[in-house]
Each structure stands twice: as C-alpha cells, then as structure tokens.
Length: 424
Image (cartoon, rainbow, N blue to C red; front, top):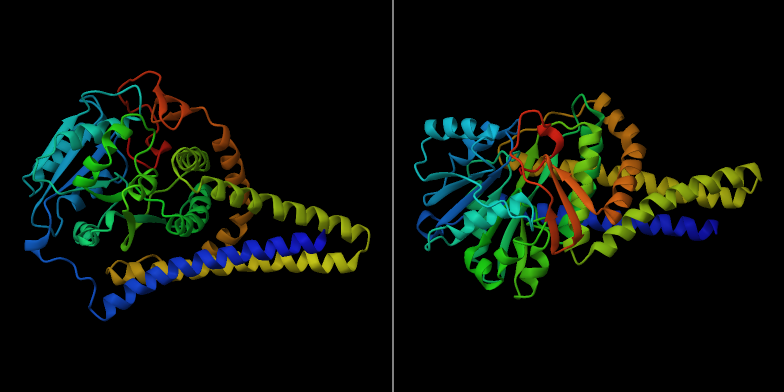
C-alpha cells in the first residue's frame, strides 16, 4: 500500500509537470515570435474586421472606471462598445454614463437589460440582447468583464488569430497577484496558478477576454443555447468542436487582476467556476478526479506516515515520505516556473508586476495546505449544487439547460460588490 500511494503521488506530480510544460511552451512560443518580430503579425488596419465589444454589468465593480477607460482607448480602427447594464437603478448606470461622456469613442451604446429571462443567468440574457441587436456588418464580438483592465492592443491581439478559418473563438486568461491584506487573495492566487494551466490544457475559454466570429454564433445557434444556460464561456469548446472549429488561447491576453478577495468571497466564486465546468465541459470527470486525488492522496499519505512511524515500519516510512516530498516540491517548483513565465509575458507587453518579497513568498508557501482544503470543499459543493446565489439573484440549477432564475430584482448598493469576480 505504501508503494502504491507513493507511486500515485509521483504520477500526480508528473501530471503537474505536464501541465506546466504545455502552458509555458505556449508562452515561450509567443516570446519567440515577439522577439523575432514574425508574430502572425497583428493585422494592419485595413484587414481588421468590424468588431463589437460587449460589457455586461450588474453593480459597479471597484475597477470598472479603469476597465471602461481602457476599452474606450483601443488601438483599433473599426469597433464599437455595447454596454448592457442590469437596470436604470443600477449603481453602475451613472458611473458608466459619466465616463463614456468624457471619452473619445463615439460609437458607444448604453442599454438596460430589457428582458431578464427566467431560464438563464442575467449575463446570458444581456449577451443575447446585445448580440441580437448588432449591426449586420459586425464580424466579431468581443466579451470582457468589468474587472479586466485591458491594454491598448488588446482587441487587435484578440481578433488577429480569428483569420485562421479553423479558429472560431479566441481567449486569454486572468492572473491574480498574491499580495494583499486578505488571505482569500493568496488562496485565490495559488488556486488560479494551477487553474490557468488546466484551462489551457482542457481548452476551457475565459469570458473575461473572449472573441467569437459572429457567423459562428449563427451557425451554432449559440444565442438559443445561452437563453437556457447559467454560463456563457465554458460550453464553447464543445459547441465549436461540433463545427470542426477550435478555441485559440492568446498568451498576450493574459490579464493581471489586482482586485482583492476575502476568503468567503473566493469560496463562493470558485464554487461557481467549478459548477460551470460540471455543467458544460466535456472534461469535467477528469477535472473532478484530479481534484479528488489532490485532496485524498496527501491526506492518506499523512495518515499512513503517522501509522508507520508509530509502528516503526521504516521501509514504508521511507516510501511514503519520499513520495510526499516529491509531490510537494514539484508543486512548489511548478508554481515558481509558471509565475516566472507569466511575468516574462507581462513584461513583453510593457507592464510590470510588483516583486514578490520573502514575506509574500512565505505567506504563499504557508497557504498551500489551506488552498487545498478550500478547493476540496468547493469541489465537493460544486458536485451537488442545485442552487446558486449570485449578485443578489438566486438560481435553481436542475441541469445544464434547465436553469431557473427564482426572482429578479435590481441591484442595490447594500449588496457586496466583491461577492463575484465576474460582472453580472
């Protein structure tokens, strides 16, 4: 048993290495293209498709002003910004109106959500409304979240890979910082380091920076699916795959998120992320099994270590401790490698990240066990979730396409805007 447990830990560590190699190889490819200046190059103005950016809002997120400012100053000749706000009463309405009024982009439309459907999430309702009313000449829709602060070439870089006929959508991902006054921010950082590599490996798109060809929306009847869905992005791999299309990850769209999170807020957020994978992703079983193993195996190993130590079974003790040491060291090394690779990518965009001091590094190391416990609880909860409370709205989840919004009400200041990292 000691040998089997040790081997399973080593296999799990090898899987971490595989994920790390796959993700860093993709980032390295981007660096090489950038250095040799032969990026599939960012399209010239005359070849850029007409694009609409869609931002859906319920509540005024802390970084919303910076998000809007960045969206209004894109280095892109032919784009417009469609903003769908939950209601006229929403605290975001006045803020958005003022910022847009002061901006230089004329093609901005601000609308309230007309029909909050009872069969899907409010974000899906808002997306259906916005895309249904797009101009006929719009070739690409780009989705963005209110906590995403994009760079000037964001839209160009997101849209460029769509020139490949085999690519139906492009996506980036988020990268959180481990600094902050809340333990939740550190736990979220550790969890997200592993999640980013897994999302790339399993081709899970991120709606915070996502571009889709409008013709693909029509071909796949995506809007009708959103009308019955809880989440807009996770399903895309399967839907596009049915059309022989793929989702392309764009390394330069790795967005740094400086928002802080309390532990309770992170727990609620990560449960929703896992729930979306359970409902809509074909690799959910693999994701769940991996999550179970990362909790069960170390726990069993520690228990066996105590037993073998008490019984003075030194041979078994050596196997178990060796397997656990390899597993823990591999986790830490993969985290460091991914952090350095992402820092290099962010640096290529001209953005800087705060250095991680010894105190922050020690805090990350000490938080590893807590992260595993929180993740295990969130995964267990996501497996059985039948009800979700999200930004003041309760949803009943009976199945992927059987969603019920229990009761709609406008968003108010009294609700915690930090409860969700995703707009609406």
